[in-house]
Image (cartoon, helix red, strand yellow):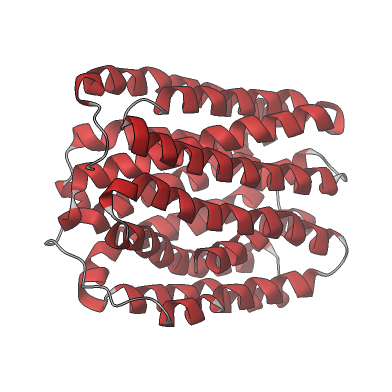
Length: 374
């Protein structure tokens, strides 16, 4: 389910901004397609914990896949900025349903002693599909097969419904209304801020890197595939470490690795794209981003407990998706004002700025950094 939903999303993640750009839209409008998608995603995610209590996981996931996939066919009619932004907004609702319900599902099904590896396994499914879908979408679009990529973007998420039917029976989500607000701010601050900043950088990478390297779209496709592969390694590797050595010890080095990757992107996009720097940046950024994802998610699940798995999932996904949208929009503006090297330099600086917060949390938690409930 994770592979097909995120595969369908990833097919179009860099394609829609590129299509808007080629239809005459500005860099800011190109980035706005991702920002609007993520804005409706985040607004939907706020309601998902309550929907899980009312509908259960199967219905939330099924409706989400339908809304993520089916509206994509409307891109066959137009990729001009206004209709493209409207289509992106509708698809974002579906993505909001799928992301929160899917992450909460892992916490419901996985033994607590294996929670780090279970979330890492989910990351493998997501990242592996992205490794294929990101370059495939760009290759199809760049090769003049726009209709094919939009049809695939509609059909692939709908395949998830087959997986949803096969899910084991899951009790309705626990807890009362207002789940996300009940999580203490002290718990939310470090993991959510880290996710927000690294995801913002990812929003710039996924939306603007294909435009930044000009006509060399193949380079961007390979770089995005490498990012996805490195996320896979970073996320599962962090999950194994969390299960073995406990929470709170991975976030700072993960952020530093992500910042290094963004800085390498800043150097790599100069002069139309320096392949070695772009690939090195892809590896470093992906490993850092994947490790941040896992550490943040397991931290929130451990703090929330079974009664608030939906709320913890919503907090993590909101940070992820709000960051992706904000990054795509804000860094698109930076691109228009200062150029593409500054896009990734600003992203690197933003990640570095979070390190003191994460370090403070690590020092605070160090005396009780036990294994996640054996």
